[in-house]
Length: 293
Image (tube, rainbow, N blue to C red; front, side, top):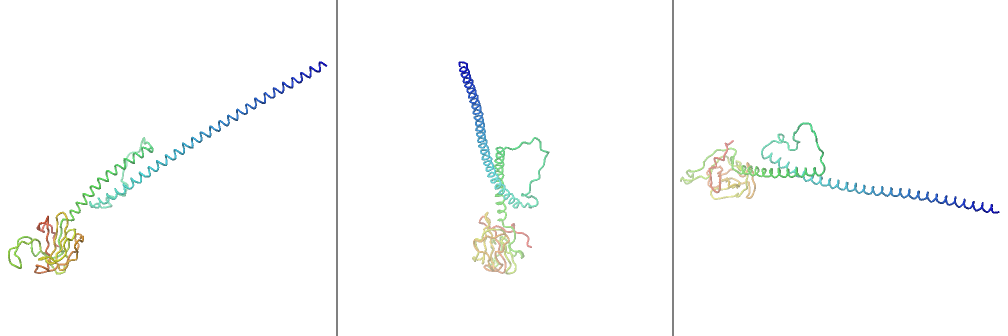
């Protein structure tokens, strides 16, 4: 009886030990599983955070690149506008200077050359923008100089065009010169303030320089008179006309028909009395004339 009791106790103790071992092993495995899961979750979270950081960096790089592109686009637009104005000024200068377009084409790329490139370095964006700024400043400087030269040449050309040069008629003959003469009506000594060109009635009379008409009508002694102010102190007069074909305030060009030859006013026959006035004083027109055609 005692033996059976001892055996029963030993069995219970064995069973309890086995159960304890089993429970302990199961708990250890559960702890190991929890730790692995936590490690996996930690790694996953770390990767997610790293990806978020990289996304932010990529987005920042995209924004920065776009801003750089926008800056470059704006600078390029400004420079293109400046180059366009520079080309226009250059073309005007070539026109004023009488340079043929085929001799100096501003739209053609200049011919350049050199040795094979070595040790070249690529531009980064800041350096590129700095180079654009330097180029823009250089263009501004050249454009300013070209504008000044353009203005000077234009003024010179206008001044040259304003100086009387040529004849008031294409055909005819000089019937009376400038200076002292005997008045054909009174026979007395007189000063002739211009040169008379005789010809056929109705012959076209031309302006010898560009300017603005300041008188177009009758005037005592002159008959029908056209007076043109050329600026720079020069005025020309065309008198005894049969008919004036320009009006006061009208702008005329050199060679333009301004009147028709007649014999109005103090005149003995068809002719044009041609005067050149410089700084308010009549001067001899002869130095301003050209040989008659």
